[in-house]
Image (cartoon, rainbow, N blue to C red):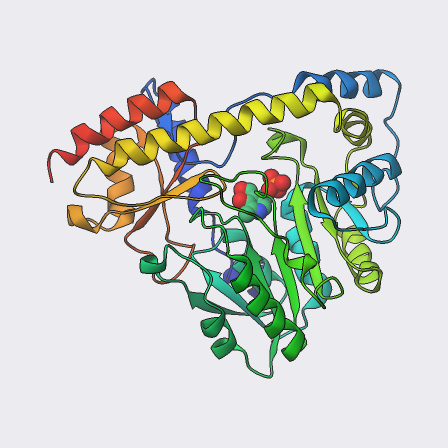
Length: 393
Ligand SMILES: Cc1ncc(COP(=O)(O)O)c(C=O)c1O
């Protein structure tokens, strides 16, 4: 007889994104010319100013523990950015936590507010972490399917209809992974009213707030009346600064929510790596970093247009043009395949990796996600492979 793992882990799904990444890696190792449109990882390297400052920090022996809250200088730099870009004031001590990636920010926030059996409303399709972290915390996921006809816009009435006396938290991701939707301020205002009226927490994952297209405007949920006290704002550096492997994220919240969050963070990871925090604190606001970010954002905009134009030529696909983030959804039912089969065949036969939305929401079996955080040549070549594949249908 062997000891058994926890019941909680039985509910946890392995990520479809990682599954496709692993299969793509296996095929690549066999020598196949795999192109990845699957993972949400900018193909750019981290801006030089950030790398140089971090090397210097390591050389200067910033190799000891930092504060559990995160390095003060980085918290100050984050507070300055939030004020400058969003007009939101968060105190560096007691309202900003530096985490190991936005991933830890999400899990720590959820563990800090949920009790066993609490319900969590998640509009879907949604980033896979949310539901799985809710399961880990012993909570119950209540999916609110968003409609493709509305381009996956948030629907406050549907959210309101899902609230029960057990509801504790709503999770909003704006701009959205995987749909690329950017939520309209008037809808966010309705969500804010709902949260205030029903006394709910809101986890607002705003990690893609810099990625906006077609004049889309971003507004933070924390900026609506009554929301600062109940919003756990999650963000990170992985996407905007091409720092996925550095594992640095943040939670910004009101002082009243901070201690529970800090307790969870302390026992999950203690603190983020010190020399990376020092390097980032010193280079975050440098003109070199700002220029590098601007160039990356402009490139993402051009890639988004290239893909929307290219994919719209294929009558077998329905394309949902994104307004934000760097993902795009396609409905593949015109091929007669569901998204799982479609993505498997595209990868095995043409070495093009996309992600089926199984795991992103129960109603998503015909939807597949494309990440255009891939190089422009890989997008162009991928479109050619897609054309060849679709000729059969
Ligand atoms: C919506 C969303 N939130 C959080 C994360 C996690 O980011 P990090 O790499 O900082 O943990 C991702 C990564 O794909 C994401 O898409």
